[in-house]
Length: 259
Image 1 (cartoon, helix red, strand yellow):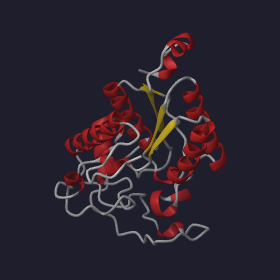
Image 2 (tube, helix red, strand yellow):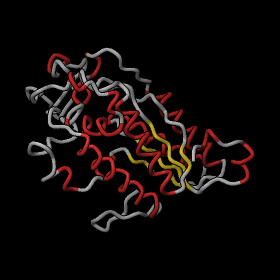
Image 3 (tube, rainbow, N blue to C red):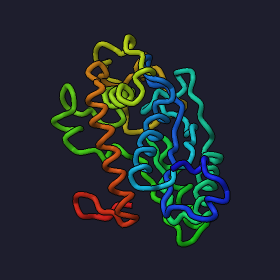
């Protein structure tokens, strides 16, 4: 169910207890993936999970935080459309709080874009304070919801390089081959792994953009497949649906609270 497709009267009469708010980003994803990769993935996951759980789906916020050199290539590449932290936080806070005032008791904020995480946390904290009694559940690292084997023995071509190095590589390429193959420039997928980028555990400003791979792909993408993407997508949807169904005190596989 889409929030925006309902009338004001229908919202006033009844809203489900949970809504899902996907937050995207527009940034480079190599020569083969669209700028909207970080928008398409959370939007599609959110739609499936909303349908499964009966949650209302809020319109996707297409713009996110600025890409960092070490995790998305930064401003070396044209086409990125970022918003400053203050308006990003204000939009997410305002939308989440308004959904709560309309009767929703829990707002799930879902993001795939790494750089969104810190700003969304602060926006969600403020929204929860704005409407006491409302739970705001932030999922800013949805890859952690995937079955472990997909990032372990079933990861194509060897060891999973980690999420920072996976930018525009096997996982995102596979997901897009499954979700939106018409948007993937298959003839432009790099045919081999790029030289290992220098990814320091710190950031220097201004960005040292010359140290980023020239094609904007941080790890191997040529082993990606639609079938692997389907399994990843199903794992993402299953994981998020389980969290939504269990409520704000959902537990992970280790028995510890999540959310």
